[in-house]
Length: 172
Image (tube, rainbow, N blue to C red):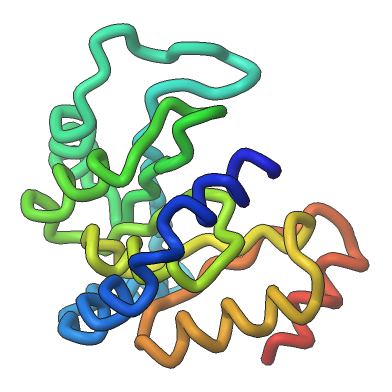
């Protein structure tokens, strides 16, 4: 996660500018409600990603907008857009390209470590963010969760075991 902290450090001088830009947005798509379809319907989160650490490059001709259109045409309820460059070859530009063509909620899937990344997500068109419990201490997890909720952003919390699930439940 050192690479993510270095990325955050590089953009911290823009913190107030990003926060102000994020405050101007109020058209969030309701990630959570898009998946709440009742007991007889399946909610689908389609994932837009260029690569993964285990699979390597998934599509050498990756086009985020093309992949998003395929998911939209297929009936996805939400889209997860990988924005981590180092491990997934993603970027905020992918999210920015998908946002104007999407009529379903988008989640920024990344290693969120600081509030400025929440502001970036909002500015780039995300309706939700992913918080990975294993990557955050309790104070940071709580602070980031609160900041996202204060902006009316939905939060998907990823856990890998029971202790992490208990930490997530403590968020509220």
